[in-house]
Amino acid sequence: MRKGYAPDHVLKVGDSPGDHQVAVNNGCLFYPIIPRVESESWRNLREEVIGRFVAGTYQGAPMAEHLERFYTVLGDKPGWEK
Image 1 (spheres, one colour):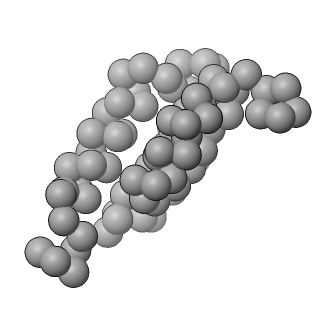
Image 2 (cartoon, rainbow, N blue to C red; image 1 turned 135 degrees about the vertical axis):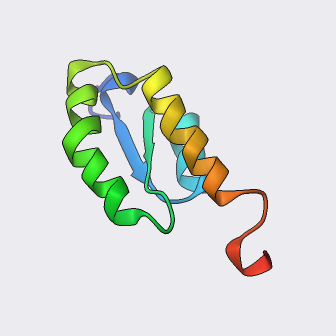
């Protein structure tokens, strides 16, 4: 973004709530790699999300759906505390 990219032209990919917070703090988009289904997450990024991102249609509901699933899988406690 320091190079002049608009926030909606930056996609942060991450696997933790901290990664999501970095995206929020910088105003950019976020795609979560979901624990225990990492291969599916990477395939979905490649086959669907990148196309939506490039077309400018990833923000809003599509990103919110991925975030909802991400936080549902994570729950409120780390896996080692469950």
